[in-house]
Image (cartoon, rainbow over all chains, first blue to last red; front, top):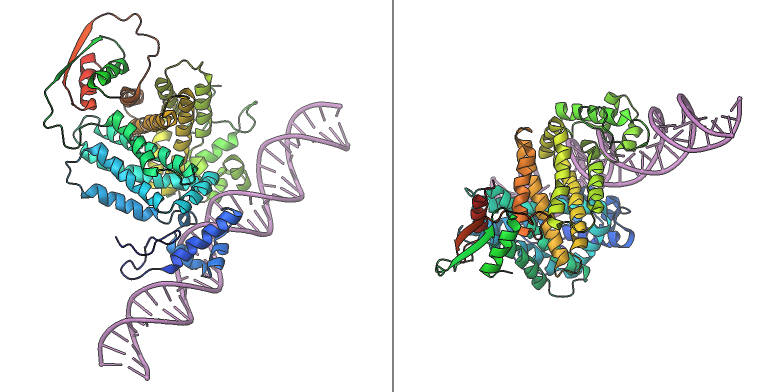
Length: 245
Length: 245
DNA sequence: GGACGTATGGCACTCAGTGCAGCACTCTGA
DNA sequence: TCAGAGTGCTGCACTGAGTGCCATACGTCC
């Protein structure tokens, strides 16, 4: 909502959301990353962090339920933004496009702080515990997308299956693009990379177009295939006929 | 490889793989699950487990690097089986079908011990820590599939993107089917459910044929569809026409 | 019997995470 | 100005996971 100063790293607001800002949370994130980068995650204890930040040990766990959480200080808010976004529609949007847009919210969060994101990427890549934690975060994003799609696909045959698969595909495409951008130290156009990746998913699963469809011409396509031919072959033929790919 | 007694729960062999069997590992798994089920995972300490199993505390961590590992005693072997399977091909197989077959290996492991799998499912569903751990296990499966596909798609444009997305889709479809089977207490045909789910992924991503096709009867199928109709709708129609499902 | 490798047990230690109590500050109302 | 309440921070003690080290027991080979 608010748009104050864009500091170096963290800027999520959790306690006291109405008034000003809790500098302590930011101080803890800053101290933690300083130590993580110069001596490694596992070689840094929570005591080291709070000593450097000049606060009490108990306060650390007031802001971050675990040591891992300090590495992902903004995901909680981003996840809330995503669920808000998905809930805000009127239910007539094209579902796959909608979840792709939701995924772009995550990219935007990463892109807001490129240097911080790249540092975190390098950290999570080499620390197994952080990788596992990141997985649980990604899983929550994926579940949010899947739940939205399940609701939209309600009544459809294999609706939950399609919802789960498409959500996973969207997340995988997003992460593929995101990681390639992070590997390049935040150079290049992150949005374009993600758009391209999500385009691949939409080409595979995209269903109805955003709005134009109502006024489609009633052209008729005839596909001829040998009975018993593998399904993929038939689909390929149809894709060609319909002009995809 | 070997097929001795199929005990109630665990039967993976890690230390001393050449000779007989380590009963201690099985005893620990059995004691752990007994306590997890009757008093909960978090309410059970490692000391409780080793006391019930009648072994030293240090031995627990010799067999299981963490408390979570005792809940997934057979995934390490299953993962090795999967990588072996993927590496055993001659590189001419249809890639998507190949990773689907690899995913079926995981299902087989679950289906070997339905009651154990259902118990574990209920446990992981309610314990956040175990869910996070399971995610990291699933992630390793997904990476194995993705790495295989990346190799097979080498040189293809967007090869790594397609590999990641397809791997994620296969895993999601597999898990969707697996979980629906687990929710039904292991009743029903797990293989058929998973086949159906994987069929959906193959219909979306499948590319080249396995081998048959050469000697198919020349019956002719005609599919008529409005141009602009969503792909999934067309596929659904074809599935019905071809007599699947 | 002695040397060796291996499986196990015991002990002490680090560190993450929690519950509790106390302290400091602020705001409010009389 | 002071009493009271609410809140944020700190220190302290405790549980429990996970590790390193060493001692012990068992079997094998020489």
